[in-house]
Image (cartoon, rainbow, N blue to C red; front, side, top):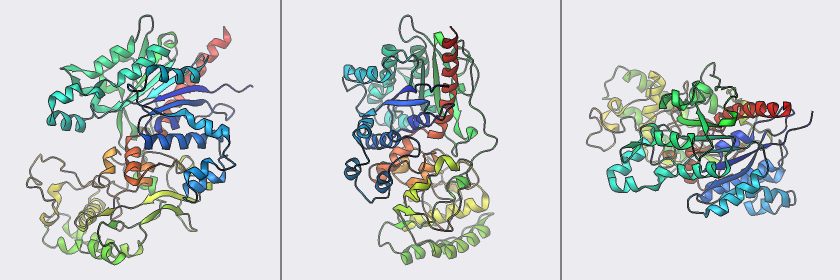
Length: 514
């Protein structure tokens, strides 16, 4: 049996490449690559650096990246030294050009169209993927921007960045498109009109003579018969270790609309935080000033005495947990590093996605470093993680002892904003949604182990987002967190890509029989 030519993929608003990574990972019947990521467009130069590095990695083929790639991940050589290494050929460098650092809506249309024309060439089938920026649709973004300046919010061009995606559909008419966005899109309005209804209308009939069926991946039916919420994928129900709820539209060109509708397969049981990050080395957090093992231990061990006057049904259990965690914390002296070598006796990853994450050639973990926190926040983290350990729930501010409350006059008010601003990622549950706010502070992403008393590292957040361990994020730590939080989970994208692959296989079979 001859191998199929890989199906071209064009990825718009690509971020660090989570959606594209999922599609690129799918194999055909002969273990050949089913999809080929031809163009990915991202305006942020740091995320573009991540995209182009991953394109280089893929160019070598499955399990064939040279040692110099791993040397770069381990920090032994610079990016320039990697790109000039004898094992990195001109063909490899050329492959990096699939990632274009450009801003859709600003970069001339003719330039973007030229990239896409060359990429899809004469392919019978190709797929458009991507997620327009979501700040204007997200609930938090809308609240912040509309409250600050309602008129400016209405003028914000990000309401209509999806029209850049739409323009590509009109111009090139892909067989299939996959568009991802935040759940807030369903309730977003502009000028009093629902944004989601406009998007469905535009994508259903983008241009005279061309129509698309807009399908859900979790409920059978098409847009005209479904409710807006039927397009929401609750990722934890499909084997992703976080409660990430996103709108994903599957567009099928009308000449293929007779091909059967397939849905994502529900997971038998959820994948938990503990299963996903249990093998990563234990770390202590840093103190943001005068950091040392002793100062850190003194700060977190001081938490127990702050609970003496706290009265709560679980007060005795939490005090006992804080005491035990303070003793266990003395074993955690490392704050991590950019590369953490694997040592003998390391725990095995519990996740059923073990083979997806791990790369034996890496011989360790990259970007697993803790960040610094004020002593007062560390004590809140210690309390919160002990509370969660004993109650199996992350505490609200109403549960906190007065002495540990943040300095907000309305911190205890019923209905106060951000009542769960110190959120523990529970060991036995999927995580809450990893979003770009993780770059600003770790309060929403407290590690479940009180003895580590810290927020999640970049690598832990990347694991929860289902990025493989050999996926390297360029930039400083804040920029790395931002990229991870903005991404589509690659493993969810892979599940979607398999549905698209099966769909196109049926289309190919039909053509072969004509």
